[in-house]
Each structure stands twice: as C-alpha cells, then as structure tokens.
Image 1 (cartoon, helix red, strand yellow):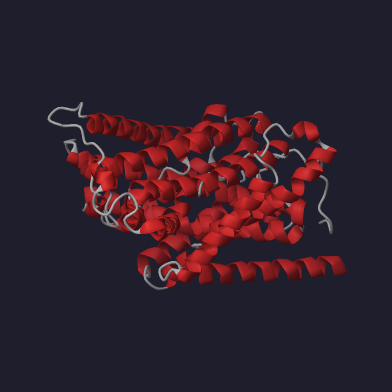
Image 2: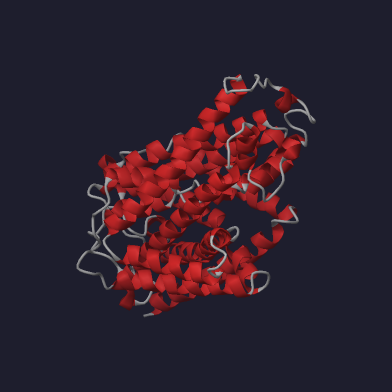
Length: 461
C-alpha cells in the first residue's frame, strides 16, 4: 500500500460486473432511504417536535442532501465499489479508508439483523404457524441467492421494491392533499387548526425541533449505497451523477411532504412512538384495512433494506480486500462478475447478528446496536473531510472529471461538518441517545487504533 494518498487519476478498472442500469440506480437512490424509519419511526419525531417535525426533517434532510452532493462529486470523478472508503484513503491516508470501510461494513451487517427480524415478525403475524426464526432463515437464504447471482438480479429486486415504496408515498401524498382540501367523500376542508392548536406550530419550542432532528436524522442513512452500486453500471461517472441529482430532491420532498400532510390532518398529540402515523392518517380518511396495507409496505421496505445492505456490505468488504485491508480470499469473483466470497462473508456475520437479536435482543445485540448507533455520523464526517481535501486536487489534476460539483464549496462542506459535530454533541446531552454516542465512539476508536497500528507496521517494512 501507499504511504501517501495516490493521485485521483490512479483509478483501476473494477473486476466486477457492469449489469446495473440507470433506472436501477435511480430507484435505488429513491428507495434506499424510504424504509421503516419513515413509515413507523417518524411517529417518535412527531411526539417530541409536534408540527415542528416539518422543520426537523428539513434540517436533517438538508444535511443528508449536502453529504450526498459531496459524495456524488467524488464518486462521479472517481467511481469505485468502495466509494467513500476509497475516497477517504486517497484524501486522508490508508488509516481513513480502513476505518470508514470497516465501520460502514459493521453498521450494515448489524442493521441487517434488525431488518430481517422486523420482516420476520410481520410475516409471523400473517402466518402464525411458521416460527419467526424460520422466516428469518427464508429471507436470508433468498437474498443471499439473489446477491450471489448476477448483479442485475439485485438491481431488479431493488427497482421493484423501491417502485412500490415510492408509489405508496405518492398515493399517500395524493390522498392527503385531497383530504386536506375536503375533496374526499364525507370530508370537510381541514384548515390550519392542527398546525396552530395544541401549543402551536412549535409546541416544545426549538428544543423540540432539535430533538426531532435527533430522532429522524438516521432515517436518511442508506443513500450512500447508490454510489457503491454506480461502480457496477455501464457508465459509472454519468450514472452516479444523475442518480444523486434526482434522488436527493425527491427524497426531501417525500419526507417533508409526508410530514406536512400528517401534522395538518391529525393533532400531533395523538401520535405515539412505535405507532405508524401513516396508518393513523389512512384510518382517519377512511381507507379500509389501513393497518394491513401499511404492514405490507413496511414489510417490503424491510426486505428492500435487507437486500441493499447485503449488497452494500459485500461490495465494501470486497473493496477493502482489493486494497489489502481485508483477507485476500474475499477477492474471488465469479464468471458473472459477482464477489461471491464477499457476499458469503457479509451474510455469515449478518446471520450471527440475527441470531443474537433473536436470542439476546436486550443485552448482547443491544450493545452491538448501540455500537453502530452513531457510526453513520462518523462515516458522513469522513466523507465531508475527504471531499474538502480531494476537491482541490481534482481541480488541479483532472478538472474534466468534475461533472457534479458540491454547492458553495468549501463553505457548505464546512457547514455540514459543523452540523454533524453539533448533532453528536446534542446526542451526548440527550439521555436516550448518549449510550449510542459512547458505544459508537468506542467502536470507532477501536477501529482507528487498529488502522494506526497497521499503518505504522506497514511504514516500518
């Protein structure tokens, strides 16, 4: 490996397949972050922020949009299956690429357990005769097979999963607007009563808005996978730029638009953490079997996230192996360009996580979940630092590759960094979030220590 970061121009062709199409990447970008965190988890944000949750989502969404713009700029200029891990190595050194790559891999395989267990719980409710662990096994086997086959299979699965989720949100927004206007049968115009009553638009003040940000910011995690997947498309630089451009604005619209509809139609005081505000709205406007409809949407969202996380984790550990940061045996690629050993390694650890979640959800697995709770912010922070370092070098050495540029560079990049630091500080002062920051900080420190030791040993050789 290198003691100093290589030139941005030093990109080698990926040995992976190029079976993903533009439509796959676009829908992956749209569907990657539309999951249970939005359909169910948004209730917790509304409970603490009231109608001010709209501002919470605007703030969190803007931060995610800035991160994706920075990541899109680097990925369009230097597409690679390791995406931000490769960028961090080139910008900051080997230690950074190693750290962000392994942290992100660990994050994905742990969250994978939550998604598999959640989907199995819903399926068990539909078919009680089949044990929950059997459903977990079925899902893991199906998506392992999908990821071991040609990458276009993964792309097709994600395309249709994302299409269903996007369609559900568009339909929800359409029905919501009609209900607000009083254009649905047996409905009257709602007006602004729910936005101005029950304590006003900011019933808990700006502290409620900030608490809402802490509750929803991690729902935007998942967008990063589109930059990993872009390396396996026919025209990575062009495709990732188009996918990032289309995804970030539409996702912000879907998230914020949904919250506007929810808090306009229903009193915020009726929301309860753990209950889906989407179900509450559909029930209120008279949609039959609203709970079951949303159960199906959440089920699909969980399976979609499981599939995407298995894909992303396998490509990340494959990229680490390419750079000598993971066992070389993971580099074996099938005739169809699929890193099968990397897929199996990821699913193996993911399956261990699932077993821990089923057996010890409130002890061993809880510690693992806390250990990755704030890792996304550390990953985002390294993305911002990498972009700050690489932008000048790319402008100097390969300006023609800057087909997608970060807005307001370097000021908005620095603002995003400061915002992430602020979120971490606020999490430390929040009783519910503090364990995540402390455990995630410890996990990050451990990975950084290993990275530094490896770097020192390499330089001595």
